[in-house]
Amino acid sequence: MSRPLLTVEHLTMRFGGLTAINDVSFEAQAGHITAVIGPNGAGKTTVFNCLTGFYKPTVGRLTLTRPGSDQSFLLERLDDFRITKTAGVARTFQNIRLFTGMSVLENLMVAQHNRLMRASGYSLLGLAGWPSFRKAEAEAVEKARFWLNRTGLIARADEPAGSLPYGDQRRLEIARAMCTDPALLCLDEPAAGLNPRESAELNALLLMIRNDYGVGLLLIEHDMSVVMEISDHIVVLDYGRKIAEGTPAQIKANPDVIRAYLGEDDEAEGAVA
Ligand SMILES: Nc1ncnc2c1ncn2[C@@H]1O[C@H](COP(=O)(O)OP(=O)(O)OP(=O)(O)O)[C@@H](O)[C@H]1O
Image (cartoon, rainbow, N blue to C red; front, side, top):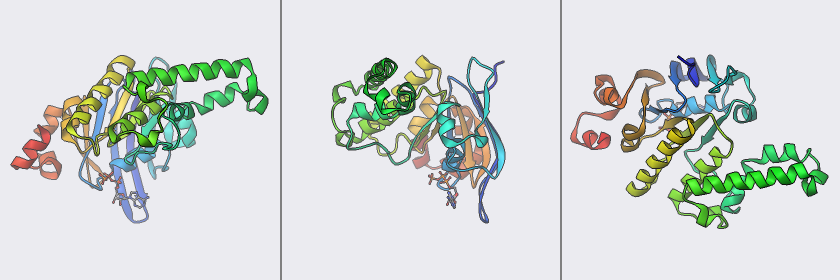
């Protein structure tokens, strides 16, 4: 069997006297959607921040193995920009972070800045007209337009990103992350603030990315209608510890998860429907 896309081993993160993550281990596979769930303060965002280089873990090993190659990267040893560029880990944020004054298309061009600068030879002359830059620029526009098509945003390519409805901005963030050709896409609460129709569109988009591009998705989400419908595997955290992992059916039936997070009353029944 091929190696997992992501292997998290004994991850521990302490902030002074507070242990936000305590000896957490799990795997995420390429072409799968893995969700990390748990109550507020359980440590979900801290896991993402360790994976994407915002924090250096106190203890633990985070291994990313690019599919179809033997290349593995220890993420905790890479600078944050190399985590995206070399290891292929992209992320979106709980609070949308777009360049709101730039157009939708320009937001996707910025995501490809590294490739364009390389093609320019890092010089103004290069920017002005080297053939390699012009070719890279045309490819970057093509890739941006490709993802705008796939996310249903192509008609809005020239509008300022900040003028898009909230659900469109969330999809634009995902399109921007996809423009970096990630092996692992980390999404921090992508359904936050979406109405039921937008949530359903988000589910379809994430399933398309999983199915058509074989990307591994790692998802933090409180909306159980999203988590239970699209996840292949769920990891449950509580007070920084992993208390369960398994399929959606296993997680829904797990007494520890019900006690700590999902709840047993009618309200929780609705939450996991
Ligand atoms: N930079 C930091 N400094 C100190 N404490 C932190 C820091 N980042 C997170 N924490 C603490 O770590 C714990 C886990 O926080 P984290 O944001 O990872 O939880 P979460 O599961 O993502 O919560 P939520 O669902 O509310 O976003 C919390 O007690 C939080 O206050």
